Length: 390
Image (cartoon, rainbow, N blue to C red; front, side, top):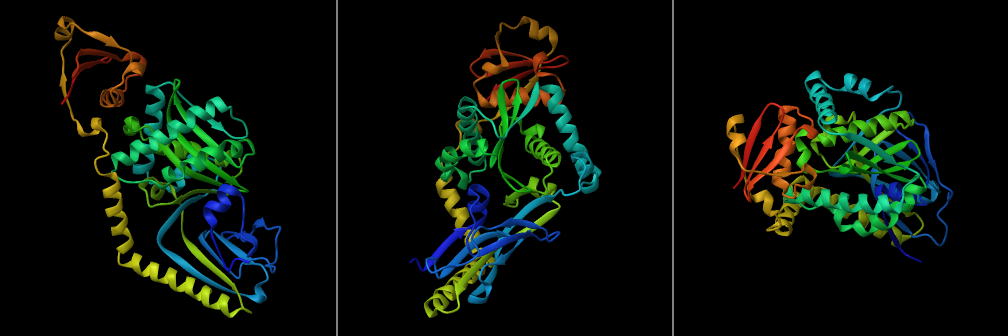
């Protein structure tokens, strides 16, 4: 019999729909309604004497199985903030924006969504309950690429990449059983934004949100959150959980911030369980102390720097210079036209997209020309610009 069982509640439950037998029931904290009822209600002789559960979100609370025979210690996980949208009773996404956001924040979000849809041929698709292997094998590699590009840009690491094989091997079947979904934002046939989500009862989890950073001026991240919130409301979810990590978009959108807790549950009748249970309590309290003095954060920064060093995209190290060109000068140039979808250089592609954003031209009305290997021309309906890659 194992003495100690460690379990990450958030990832085990939301990704695999499994729950520790120490919990007989789970409830929503905001209204005390039942969220989950476990099939197992007792810790029998074959169960570990000490159960250590981490990442338990505070918008839920448990009923402990066999409560008279166990000791329960609860410790908050310091410096790990979670963000969610409590959407129970919200009529639509626009109502939520009006009631939650200041006009100075709400206006730019809606404006960028409108501009994105007016500058590109945008459509959205939620793969939930049905997806072909062909679509899946196109979407998942692009999701990975988007995550890598974003975190290379930030010179940081991302834990999702370390578990990528697990995501790749499980998500397809989970989509078909409606335990997971992929929300995809397309510009024509190009994927420019993806969200990997999980579904448990009335909780919608936006687990990984990624987008093509070439489109960053259009606020793709906020567009995805808006569309996910819209979908969640239409499908009668109570909570849209954006998970942990104090990213700006999570702070902006959330109306419910929460912490995570450790649950250490051990048998009263065992001295060994008492010793190892209290040892786990001491460990998490010590870890919290290290976090209080930023020891853990500083270690992670050093680790991220060492792992990320020298991995920058060569294109990200280069710079662009721009020059307006008059119509009569443009006519005299000998140029080779390039279709936008055939632009291979990321910097040039981003320059075209930024030009589209700045001038509010539709992508179909923009032409790209090559002068030489480092000089290009972007021509819109009212402006023509020379782009030089330094």
